Each structure stands twice: as C-alpha cells, then as structure tokens.
Image (cartoon, rainbow, N blue to C red; front, side, top):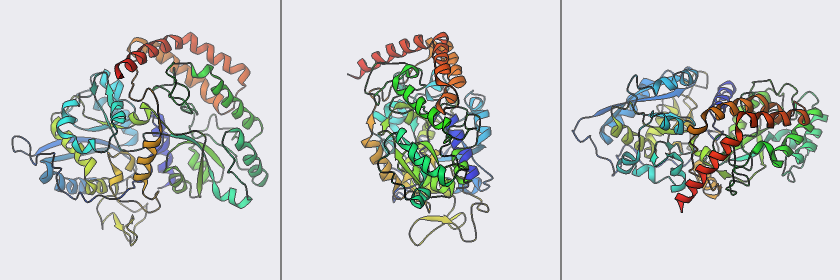
Length: 505
C-alpha cells in the first residue's frame, strides 16, 4: 500500500467514527467457485435476471471497474440470477454524497455505511432486513455469533450487516521495532502508558530530532475514543471496566481519564510528543515513515503490525495496553445496508449473501482480474502482475476492508498470514461488553448530543495529547459538558440501557 493512500484511508475512516482493523485480505480461500449457495434460487421468482445498483467508495485512479463488474456478473448471473451495476465514488465524494444516496432521489439497492446504521434507520433511510436475511442470508449466518448480529438491530429490526472484520479492539502502542532492536531496548515489561516513557527517553537520546510519540488521530476527534470502556456509541456516557459495569458514567470526570491526561501532559512537557501534534493533520503512519516519529497509539487487532509495516516502510510492532473488548461500535463501524429506495431488495440480499460466500467474487473486488491485475505467486500469495507495481496497476483499490468477507479470498503478499483465522479467534476471545448489541436512540436528547459533541471537539484532543494545562482546561471542559447537557444524555442513556438489558433476560 502506498503511504499517501493509507494516510487518507486511515484519517477518513477515523473521521467517520470507525477504528482501524482493515489491512489486507487474508484467510484461506474457500473453494466456492461460481457455484450458487444451496439456499439461493438460481433465478428470481419470475425467471428474470434482476439488476441491482450498488454504490461503494474508492481510492485513487483505478480504471478497471467495468471489467471487474463484467467478471462478477459472469459469476452472479448464473449463480443467483442477479447482475450488479456498480458505481464507485471517490472516497471524498462518498462522504459528500452519502446523504444524497439515502435521500431516495434515485434507486440504490446496496451500499456500505460507516457508523451510521442507527441514524439511517431512525431517519427511515434503510430497509428492515429481518425477513430478507431469514430467507436469503443463510451463508452470512455461518460467519456470525448471534451477539455480533444484534449490533445491526435498531429497536426490534435488523438494518445493517457488518463486514467480516475486527469485532473487537485493543489500544496499543505501535512503534518502530528496528530502532528498539538497534538500541537493544527491552520492551517486555511495558504494560502501561507510563512504562513507555523510558523507551522514548532512550530513543530521544539517540535520535534527538525524532518525536518519541505522535498522535494517530489528527485534530478531528479525541485520541482516546476507547480504552478500557465501552463508549456506547459516542462517549457521552460510557460503561467502565471493559463494559462490564452497567452504570452509565461520565468518562470525562473519571479517574481513568484524568490519569491518561496527566501521563500525556508529562510526555508533552518533556518533549517526547511532537509539539505540533495538537494542530497537525498528518497521519501517524506518514510521520513515522518519514523518520519524524518513533511511536503512536493505535486501535488494534491481529493485522495492525503488518498494516503499519507496509504503511510506513519500517518494521513495526505493537504492545497492547488493554485487553480486547467487543462493543456495538466495533461492529457497526462498517455495515452493509439496503436503502429504503431499493427497487430490488430481494436481489440485493441475494448478492450480499453471495459476496459473503464466494471467494472468486471477493478476489475480483479486492484485486481485479488474475493475470491482468495480479498474479498468484509460487507461495500462493497474490502480488502485482509481471511488469506492474502500485503506480502502474490499473486495479488495486486497497479497499479490502470494505467488502463483506475478504477473508475468504487470497492473501496479498506482505499481509498478515492467515489473518481471517486470527481475526476470528481474536473476536471470539474478546471480552464482550454487557451492552454489546445496544444502540442508543438520541431522539430525546438530540440537541444536547450535538452541543456536547461540539464541546468534546473543542477540548478533548488538546488535553489528550498533553498540549494544554490540565488543571485549567479540564475543569473548563467538564463544566462546558454539564452546561451543554451531558447529565441529561447520561440519564436518557441509562434508561434505555436498563430497558434493553431487561429485554435480554
């Protein structure tokens, strides 16, 4: 992956509310070929081939979408009686036109949504999927723990189905392992943020011009969106203790949050943190790759080290600061939905199910056409076709994370080996928040939510990178949240959570 592309990808994904965990596709390719699932009819009930309109985002100047679409339809038409008309919007256009796609001004049958399934459902923009999933989603069901599927429900109905990805996350220190090896530093005892300070001190002595730490967030959202708490969607009222406590509390008044701020302030005052980190919008991967920074904090999964190694061009390693926790937000960060404007919802669900189960379609979406856009190496991994590289390949969108089930496809050269299996185990073994599957309805506190979100944007990031005085600014931040109505939000969230928990029994 090219550094510039990845920096755009990471910053855009985080701005949309989701956490990293994308990386390259991995997992053992299944021998699904072009065969239809036994659960799906070959043609529509009328015997006609249905055509659906699918919209997705894209990066860069990839030009072979039409050829890939034709190759996909050569599989899907005989398999399930569905053809896809695929429209790709540049990733910048995607966020500009997202609401327009949901407005109903034109028929859209299938699309991913990033962190917005609850909002879309509440606004009537997405279709209820319960019956469609029950009838046509049998292959999707093979990949889901029931608790993960619940995250796509808003109220009593299913509105979104997540891509197979990280359904959990750890908070990590991610750092250049080549420098640690060069200096002979032992990092085995690093368990907390405070433990990292001596490591940065040693690096600073050897490389005084290199920042020991740089933020991975950019100035658009807070650095510690999750740590050992469940944000319950927006951080305005959280569950502490890995979501095991069912009392909704104010994160920004907690001892845990204050302790993090004090550590980060010490780093900043001692010069370990890049002094412009509060205003810089450069991605951490780009800064590390340029030799300007040694480490960052990432939201991670089994593919993080390989992803950052490819991104930066340096060998990278991670140290988990938290256990893995699975929350609703981990799952809803990227989901597939059928807009309410869909003219062919049954065909859309059939095609979504096929994307979950057909490895050849996943390879086409991920890497294009074998022999034209990529080749299979002697070791079985995928690489650029002979004579091509990242700059000349006409189909290598580097968006494997967006597709429903990339893990059933092939592994790109240099990606984390067998990532699909590792991610499945990671998800399975993660601590599940008591609120996993709960989605907060903001209708009764929409004004307070908007006001408090603006307060967080104003104060949190500067505090969390240590750039401002805690004794002065933290009390201002806390009072501004109270004035904006955070206590009302917390009370409403507690009421809804209590009702949801009671309904689970």
